Image (cartoon, rainbow, N blue to C red; front, side, top):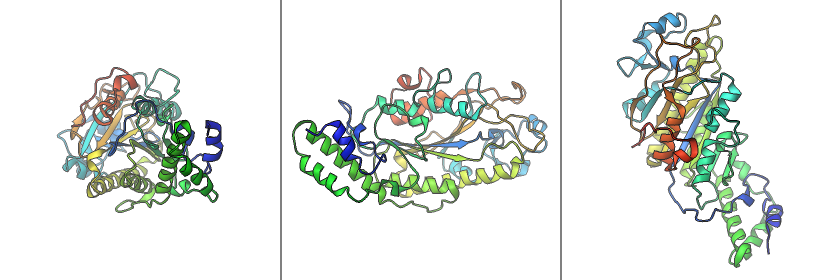
Amino acid sequence: MLNRREFLQRGLAFGSVLALPRLAWAEGAAKETGARTLVLLHLNGGNDGLNTVIPFADPMYRILRPGLAVDDGQIRKIDPALGLHPALAGFETLWQKERLAIVNGVGYANPDYSHFRATEIYYSGEPGKSPVDGWLGRALERSPREKPLRAVAIAKEKPLSLASGAPGVVSLTDFRQFALPPGTEGTLAMYERSKDDPGQRGAVARRALEAFAVAKRIAALQPIRSGLYGPLGEDLAKALALLKSDLDLEVIHLSFGGFDTHANQMGQHNQLLAQVGNNLRAFQEQLEALGLADRVVTTVFSEFGRRARENLSGGTDHGSAYPCFVIGKGVKPGMHGAQPSLEDLENDNLKFTTDFRRLYASLLRDFLRVDHKAVIGDFEPLGLLA
């Protein structure tokens, strides 16, 4: 009988690209096609939310930011009191097309201002604990599916957000990582001969063949770059290719850095937000052109915001509450959650008005269709999705 050790030694001819020994599905796992996919984008470094969704009607905005405040005539005003940074033309288009929900004041009690720890908190969904797994990893574990690949991180390493005992989670930077090396033919032939055998031998062979087939499909993919540019655009082009390949992925995780704007923020932030807005608009337009928009939602977050008051270096220091964005055909567009007060600050920080786990609860319950309470606790979903 082909046992687990032999499977590991003989089946992983192409390294650790697909963790085949862990692709045995749980008892009672559901079969599913056309799965909903959550695309999660981390703005790494701590995005300045106050200059992203701008409270232009509040006079305190210009008092706190005499140098960094955006000129009133340049703000993309989408609400009587709030507007988008001028570089976010793409988000303004998504707003006009009712594809954008803005969640204001996102944060949690006793915020941490360390990039590393704050990222752990958002990735684990558990501020009061040392992380052992991620909120999305727990979601996958809670809803087993009968398929060899469930989530992809477009990154060098699998992020904590996807960590758990659930199988079928990989990271990649290049589709060619999945190419089967020379010498794999014999292993494939062995599994082909065994696929109809009874018991464990046949089951392992069938799972291996399915996993090898997925690897070959991914290795043949080409990024879909239409309208996309820069490092973020390149990763979104890979995400589009994965989505078009109909692998039934449930999560795609991406990260885009450079948001730690302690000095000379204005020009740098302008370039970063332009990439975010333009690329995500093009990404959504491509999803709709490809007929995929009904089953994809994109969520944009950061590990924290920035201080309300600008510093002496023309930048902003680590802060707390900030806006998140949810993009998709099925979102309930508009503003969700209260904008934090600029007069009631805590050590120059905005006080959060929306616990980030309420956002997660909405994505889990209403989009991924997972028991949110079992994953992140008893937090009331925001009702962001139809």
